Image (cartoon, rainbow, N blue to C red; front, side):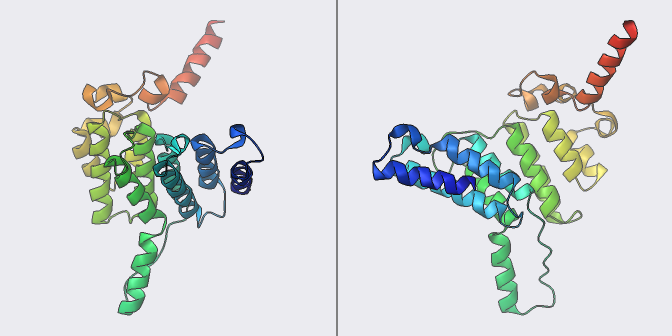
Length: 243
């Protein structure tokens, strides 16, 4: 396991047998968080990813400056939640004690972990002065899409909130729009969020939206055009035809 190797390196460094070059740092920890996000057994991916993020935060607070998490660290925890199976648990027809246990499981499950991680990042709870980027918002919308019921008030509430946050941060990219389209429970809500029924039908680029919404998104086509892959294929076909 990548985490076992990282822990071994950390132990060797602290034993004084090897120099600073083998000490795991924030990049190492984030790589292992990404490994948990994409691998593992799925069920505990988010919990293991968050455990490593907490370890980074603890070490950084204790004075290890090279352990400062970055935006990739936080987003990787959200991605781990995306790759966890949704919890299919109902509070109906259970005792109060069982209901409490289910609520606790949900709080510490993938969805609860993702919400807590996102809120801490958005509110800068640890004074890290790092900002969510468009990958963060797109990933959080994926979490909402997977871990909330399609027609629930919770889905509507958080879809609107996450997209409003993305607009406020100037981080609405093509990735965010695709995730929004998938997470949005109705076309009417999507039209209200985007401000136009026409955009629900035919939006092709974030350049069609208020400029302020994407002011911090890069100019690369893949970040700005929803059908960039199709555009690329069409362009290649036109070039072959000219030949």
